[in-house]
Length: 114
Length: 111
Image (cartoon, rainbow over the protein chains, first blue to last red):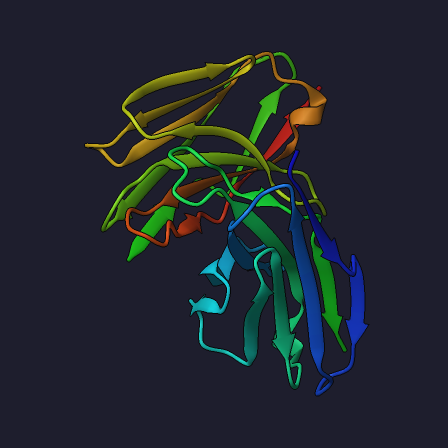
């Protein structure tokens, strides 16, 4: 069966510090991968999605970046965090080309920028 | 682009039936999802509709009308544990299969 791992679960970082969140998927090959952010009381905002190694599409221009160095690894990064980067970050995967394939979410990382 | 609208909050009584509506506008449609999200947790998948009509899964049903850009989630025999946010999400057509979420409907079930 497929599983998705996301870490860390909670993170407190000062403004201006770097960020690296990692997500890995097991039990499937060439998944579509996604990073979403959910600010307090807000909806899920799509940040990045990837259909293959090295293929990243950005939805929202900001100080975040994403990379996919391996087929089932997706990394979200920032060189300098802003206060507005605080939120609940969710990684998700789906079956590529799947007719009714839903997104499967990791447990999320709650980031607080102080 | 895509635009998805849902009511912000709803309240319903334990044991009752509640319908959560979602309207959407999209340039290319390839299905609609409903997710449940308890406070502080990740969303979990409830249902998927791509053809018009009703899909039933136990106490939960989801309906889609593509011509009207409209869907609803129907929850029957409400339980206290159903208190959560319910997210409507639209999958677009094309190679990237982008999924866009509405802001969610926070449902409170009261005794």
